Length: 105
Image (tube, rainbow, N blue to C red):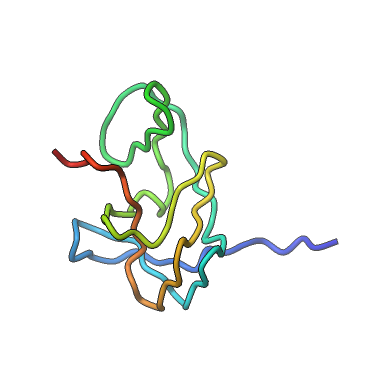
């Protein structure tokens, strides 16, 4: 039985995109599980709220809240609260997610 705890290969530092960002602490392969984020459900929008459905928001409680938007993202959030690499990510590269076409308008 494998009881190994998955430690996400991530760290937080200042971002050139916005505020703080999430960065790879090692090379991460395409389709690799980066980690699973902790959250609590909310109906209020705000910083670090991820909307999985129009009426279901989740306040991200851990370092995954620092994933910034990028039109050419290298990672994706999934509805099982996991974050996966959608392309190879180099060590010290910022981990980003595509928030949607109209995000930030």
